[in-house]
Amino acid sequence: MTQSTSRGPYAKTAAIRRRVVEACVDAFGQTGFYGATMKDIAKRADISYTGLLHHFSSKEELLTAVLELRDERSSEYLASARVLDPSANPVETLRGMLAVIVDNELQPGLMELHCVLSGEATAPGHPAHAYYAEHYRMLRRFFAKAFKALAERGELRSASDPETLAAMTIALINGLQAQWLFDRDSIQMERGIREFLAAAVPALAVAESADAKP
Image 1 (cartoon, rainbow, N blue to C red):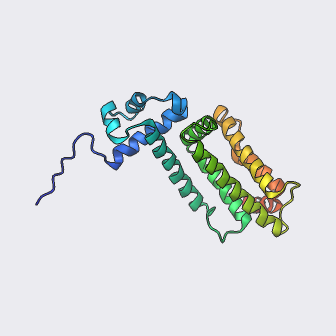
Image 2 (image 1 turned 60 degrees about the horizontal axis):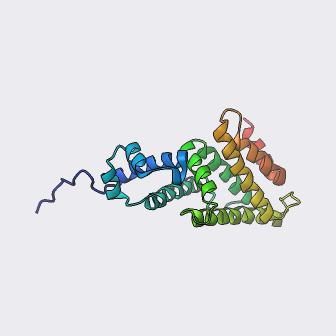
Image 3 (image 1 turned 120 degrees about the vertical axis):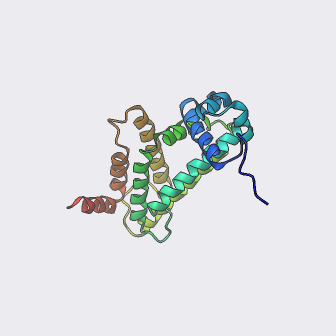
């Protein structure tokens, strides 16, 4: 029996869904979840409104797909930088995170999406509230674990405890990301975060200096 290759104009193919999600990243990043409309997203994705509803029945479903895409790309960057490697030296872990931040500058759409949605999602009723609450808890655990390991090795120079230093680091990253979106020529995210971390982790500054040598 020969399988038909005709799949119809609105078949749920991965390519179409991906195009819709990419369009949604732009829409949510520019106008937020509440400001974007399904019709606008359909237009951005070059698909009919009916076709969009065939693939995604609601904005909430689209939001879930967008956040999954963000997690997918973040995981790829983290893995490539060995940030997720449990055997990595904590200094190397922080250096890997800096590499991820540099990669993020090449994805301004996702960065804009993060800044807009995370701001909106502070409201408990927002559909991404639980997602971002867990996102920040995970980041705090990640940095706190790295700082605690450095403290145990005698390589942490900070008056703040690891948990507080972790929260401060995340606040700096978020603040610099937002400023970079306003002034990409003047704000150097990676440099600002690296210098902040190097003040608390001298070994990080030493490693960076070694890499700079010819």
